Length: 331
Image 1 (tube, rainbow, N blue to C red):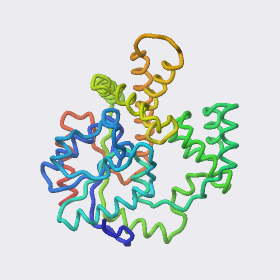
Image 2: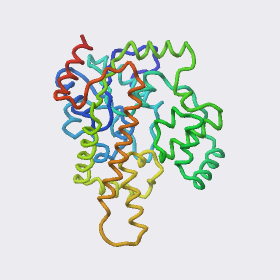
Image 3: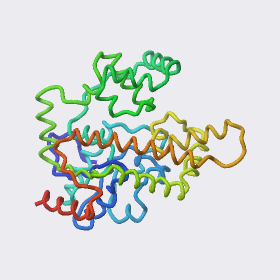
Image 4: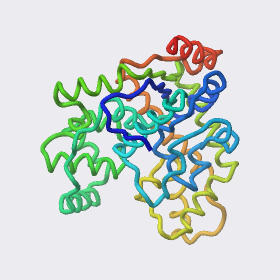
C-alpha cells in the first residue's frame, strides 16, 4: 500500500448516508458511468463471516467493481478509526495513481470525520479506571452511565446509544484520565492541524449525502431490509458465529446493530431452558428499533458536516440526482 503519511491527497469522492438510504445502489450507478474503485467506510463490513446482517455487497457487486476494506478482519479482531485513516489514505493514493476515481462509500461517520479532520492522540486505556467503570455500570446500568457522560461530554453522548457500553465506557474513561471530553480529542486543536486537515481533505474531496426528506420512508426500508435478512438466514449466521466459541457479546464485531440483538436472543433462549423456536417477532422488533436509532445518529453526524451536498434519498429519481451531482462535481 502506498505511503499514507503525505500532506496532500488526490481528489476523492465520498458518498455517505444513514443505513438503508440506498448508498450501495448509488455507488454502483456511479461506477457504471465513471472508472472508479470503492473504498468501504463501514465498521461492520470489515469483518469476515458477517455478510447477511451487514447487508454486505453481493458477490456480483464485489466482482463488478473493485472494493476495498471489506472482509479484512476476523470478528475477533478490532479495527480502529486510526487504522481506517491509514488504510484509506494509502488506497486513495493508489487508486488515483491507477487513473481511477477513489469512491468512499459508507455510513460510519466517525471514519469520515477522522479522515477529514484527523484524530488527536487520546489517553491510553487505564485498566483500573476501566474496572471501576464496570463496577459502576453493574450497579447503576449503562443508561445511567450514559446520562453521566451527557453531563461531561454532551457531544459524544448525543451520538452514542445508552446501551453502547463499550463506547460509553471509553468516553468516560478518557474523561476521567484527562479531564477532557472525548469530543475534544476528535476535533482539531490548533491552527496548524486545521490548515493541514483542510489541505488534506476539504480541498481534495466532495461529500455527497443521501438523506431522506420523510423519516417514514427510511423506517419502511429499514423494516424491509431486516425482514430480508431474517429470510436469508441472519439468525443462523449469528448462531454459527456463537458456535465458534472464541467470540463474545462485548466484541466490537458482535456489538454491530442486529448482531447484538440476535446474539442476546440466542443467549436468552439458551438459558431459559424452554423448548421451541426463537421469538423471531421480538428479534425483528428489537433489531428494527436499534437500526432506526443507528440511522438517527448517522443523520445527526451528517448534519454536523456543513460541507456535504445533500441528495434527497426518497426522491423519485434519487439515482439520477446523484449522477447529475457527480457529473457537476467532476466537471
